[in-house]
Image 1 (cartoon, rainbow, N blue to C red):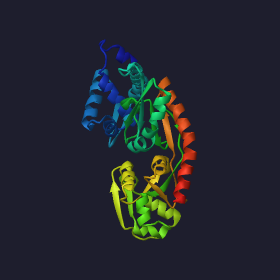
Image 2: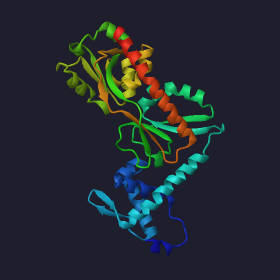
Image 3: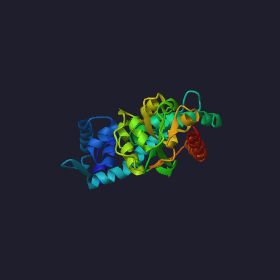
Image 4: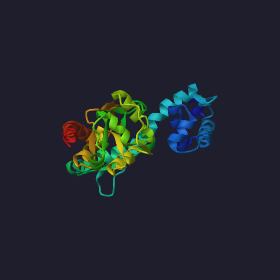
Length: 316
C-alpha cells in the first residue's frame, strides 16, 4: 500500500472522507457510523468509495449486512486514526473563549446534568475561576472524535472509545420517591400500598419497576395508573409535581431530598444500579485534570449527604 500511495499525485486526501472512514472502521458498520456522524448510510458509503478511489485500493470488504476491513484498510486505519485524534486535540488546545478563560467540555446525559452536575457547578467555578466549564448533554455513548469533549460521564463500562481513560466514579442505587404532599394524602406504609399510587417511568428505564418489585417481593397488584416519559429528568420533575411515584437513582436525588421537593418512600428498599464512570479524553488538558480532581472530591462528599437525606426521609 505504501508503494501505491507514493505513486499518487502530491495532493491531500479528502479530510472529511478520512473522518468518515475512521468512524466506519471503528464501528465496522456503515449504519452505525452514519448514526454516529448524523448522516445517512448512503453518505457514508459515498465518502468511503471516494476515499478508496483516491487511494486506489479497497478499504472494506462489503458483506451481507456487515463490512470488514481489508489488509490495506487495517493499515490505513492504524495510521490515520491517531492523526484524526491529534487534529481534534490541537483544535481544542487552541480554542479558548473570548474571555481568555480556558474551556473544558464535559459530556453527560441530560438527567445527570440537571440533577447532579449543574447544582454543583458553582463550587467548581468558585474554585477554578480561570476555567470555563461547558456542559454538553447527549443520550448516546460519547464519541470523542466527533463531539470533542474533554471529560464524559456515563453508567457502565460498555461502549467507551478504546483510547479513553475510564475510571470508576459513583456507586448508585434506585429508590422510591414522591412529593411530600402525595405521601400526606396517600401514605406508603408498605409494599401493598403501591396499588393506590400512579407509577412514573422513563422509556429508557421502563423495566425498573418490575425489577424492583421482584427484588423486594411486592404483591402482583395493578397500580392506580402508569405514566411514561421520554427521559428520566422528566420523570423526576413529574414526581416533584405530585403526579406519582418515581424510581430514581440516589445519586441524582440529593438536592431534591434536602430541599424537601421529594421524599423517600420505603427508603430501606434500595436496588443497586450499575455505577457511574468518567472517561478522560486522550491528551487530557490541565483543565480536564482539574475536573477529575473535583469529581473525586464531590464523590467523597456525596456519601454522607445521601445518608443524611435518607435518614430525613425515614423521619418524615
